[in-house]
Each structure stands twice: as structure tokens, then as C-alpha cells.
Amino acid sequence: MLRRLFVLLLLTCGLTAIAAWVISPEMAETWVYSRTRGVEAALAARDEVWLIRGAAPAVAIGAWLGLRQWARTERALRTLWREFLSATSLRNVDGSLARVRSGLFRGSIAACLLLSAVHWESGVRRVVHEWPVYRWTTGTRVLPNVSESNRDVIRYVQATTPKDARVLAVSDQTVFFLSYYLWPRVVLHRPHPDSQFVVPQPGQSRQLAAYRLQDLSHEDLARLAPDYVLEYFEGRDYFDAQRVFEDPMWTRFVREQHKDGAYVPPCNVRLRPIDEVLRGP
Image 1 (cartoon, rainbow, N blue to C red):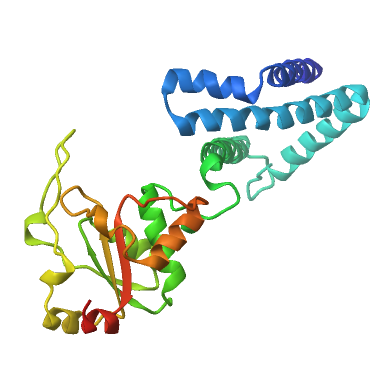
Image 2 (cartoon, rainbow, N blue to C red):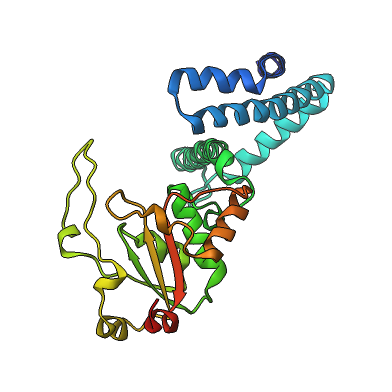
């Protein structure tokens, strides 16, 4: 019976490896994308093919070596099984073997091993799914689940302000993500009263009201006491095409990020020290 399992494992992994090398990663990517229309799912399918190409032959070779040296394999497995039974045999105080207690103990170990296998499989699938995005980098560098312009702004502020800076964000967006990714910097934001307690409806696009820098008085700035002021506007009611290149450092930075000397940012961004803001235009 045990030998049949090794033969079945060898055949299954061997055929899987052959199929993985016959089907190209690009074919798998195209097939998944045509059915899901999801870019991440398609990229994950491509990486799964590469994972199977490496794992299936390794398991097949292991099974083949075990069958080739079957006498040693069988002896080692039987020895391992006897050691497991001996180590998990529980006895009563009088020395008699408690079969029920031993069975429960072994069942608990088997359940833990099964749970570990399930978590391991889930972890592998999660890594494969996120590999197209994360690769060998951390979330703080990849900045997942935010827009491309958000990533550019976050990286720009990270590159141009010290870690202990207090940054006042004047924006038409909810900038809680800035606090998360720019920590330990302190990000300050004064929301407009008309933009608070707004519950978005499915399929509804609504421009939230926001303060502009000129709406904040010197007393407001003094009370908030920021080190830098970040102006970041992207919505249709606040974006001004004439101010796209107002901050030359931002323009240079974002063009280097996109490796395009003619790149035009889709948002207004201007970062200045508070002293420069208080001096006026």
C-alpha cells in the first residue's frame, strides 16, 4: 500500500511537471486574465506556473529515489512510525496502557499537523498572489492599495522632509493614508465641515469640499505649528492645470520616478517649509 502511494505520487508530480513546462507562464496569464479581467490574478497565475515548475520535479525526484531504494525507505518509515507510537503512548499510574488517552493525544498531534499544512498552503498561495506587487520589497516601499499619484506624493514627502517633521496637508482628499505611510512624521489636516460624515453610495462619485491654503489664517497655522505645508489637489473642482509645475523639486522628483523627462503630473503638489509659506508668494 505504501509503495503504491509513492508510485502514485511519482506519476502525479511527474505529469504535473510535464504539464507545467508545456504550458508557458504567458499562456496561463492570458487564460486567467480572459476569465477574470484581473491583472493581479493573471500575474499570480504566471508565478504559480513557475512555482509548480520548481516544486513538482523536486517531489517527483524524491519519490523516484524513495522507490529506487525502497528497502531503506520502507525501513526508515516503519522505524519512524514505531518511534512515533512509542513517544505518544500514554500510561496510567499503575503502568497499564491507556489506549483512549493515547489515541486522543495522537489525534491532537495529527490535527495540529493538518492545521499547519492548511496554513502553510494558504501562506504559499498568499505569497504567490502578492508576489507580482511586493517581490522582495516591503509594503512601506510598495505602497499597495493606493493610487499612483498617492504613491508619488508619499515618496516625495519621505524624500524631502525629516522623520520628525510636522506636515500640514492641505488637500481635497482624505489623507489618513499619509499618516500611515509617513510615520513617524506627524501629518496634520483640517477637514472641511461639508466633507465630514459623508457616506458614499455604490457607484457614486462625489467631490468633497476642502480648504485651500488661502482659507487658513496665520492664527490657524500658528495653532497647528507645522514644519512643512503640503498642498495636494487632484479633484476636478480643485485641480489647476496652470499650477502643475509650480514646485520644481516635485516636477523633477516625479519625472525621475516615472523615468520620463516630459511626464506631466495629474495633480497639483507643492511642499514648502512653514517659514516660506508665512512670507507669502
